[in-house]
Image (tube, rainbow, N blue to C red; front, side):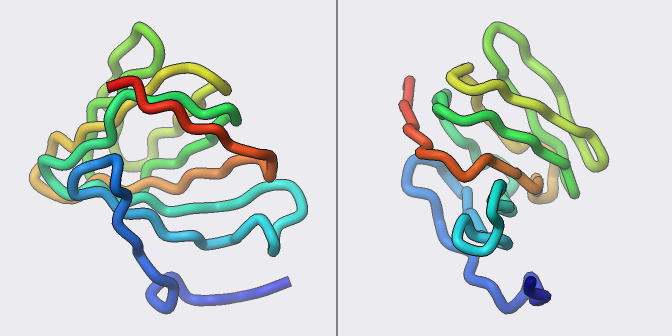
Amino acid sequence: MSVKHMIDLPLEPIAAGEKTSKQVLISPEEGPNFAMRRFVIESGGFMPLHSNSVEHEQFCIGGEAEVVIGEEIFTVKKNDVVFIPANVPHSYRATGSESFEFLCLIPNKEDIIDIKE
């Protein structure tokens, strides 16, 4: 069991993306089944098309983005909920004037990431 404040946790850049950072809120070592991360994609930033070997459950907490999931394109914003199945290609591009932020929960399993672009 733990309680911490988000501002005390490091926000680290993601090399594969542009203007994109990740913050681990609950690590796989802390949560027995799921890890929780916060992603921040600054205005104009993106994560390229990629797939993960684990599913993603996401909750948008700010900003707006275009999200590609498989063959579909969605515009998502604060309070939207996104589910990305394992091994489905997806990408993100912040489209608003403010940063796009979301929480992402993943199962504590090996996550193989395959960058498509």
